[in-house]
Image (cartoon, rainbow, N blue to C red; front, side, top):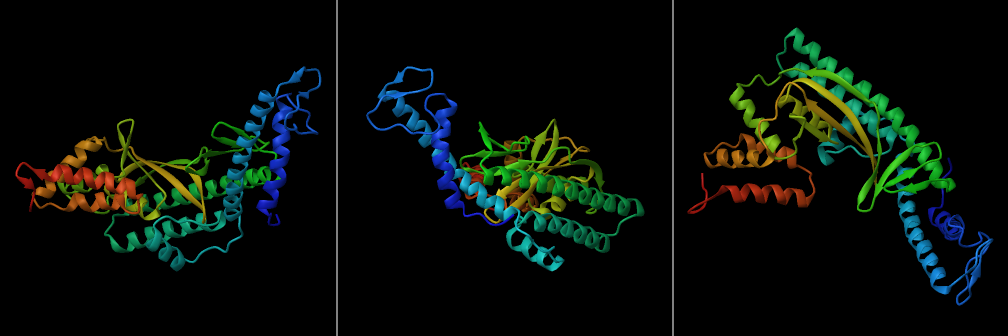
Length: 344
């Protein structure tokens, strides 16, 4: 599809939208706009007073503001659908090391995720001493991730193309926080948040092996740090939502065993898209609330135990500034002793 001049597109569509909103409400004829100071007659309706016309114009102006938001969506959609060559492993590793989250055109991001998963599982198999059963679990995990990513890639590209066409043609409609294409495909939009497309039905059950082989008390210190930061709870089980491929492996190493994985959504960014993944550790029970976990991290730190701080920091890495300060301030407050700041 050829590039579109978004400013020109928006200007023409905004003028049409101003009239269409009034026409759909059966308040004004679609072929004309109200003139200042005149009472306007509509088909089969009495004359409208000036105050009513003013309210109609305010409605149209509100929709013009929505139109500006659609211009931003169009730019993001164009970036998401931009043609791209498959990335090399070296390119993916460098990008992940620098930014954490993989972002770019949909035809770059999903192959990048697959390349990262393949490379990392191979390195784990070469680095750790695994039994045959553990190797089988590791490669089953790899294959499950690849299958999910391929399915989500196809679904995401189809939905992005449908919504892009609707935005370009001006055939989309807004319902609450959803932008709909004529075929029913929709995108979640909300002011202050990046637009996203929900991925449906792309799930798998698999297992991740115990590659660290730590004593339970040492493993729990790693789990505690994750819980104090990014880890959530779903029906009593620990779960992680992430857009960072390295975090998938770092977290599952501490929550090994039976897993339920879902590709949740594709987020439209100003660089293209990113992929959001949800993983639930079905073999573990969530033992701590968020506040309890932060309290315990602080307690261990007072005694000179830094292990939970490592995974707590990993969970906060590249978080928003507000999120970072919320968690670190909470930890510092818990470190405060009756006689002043605790020292180790």
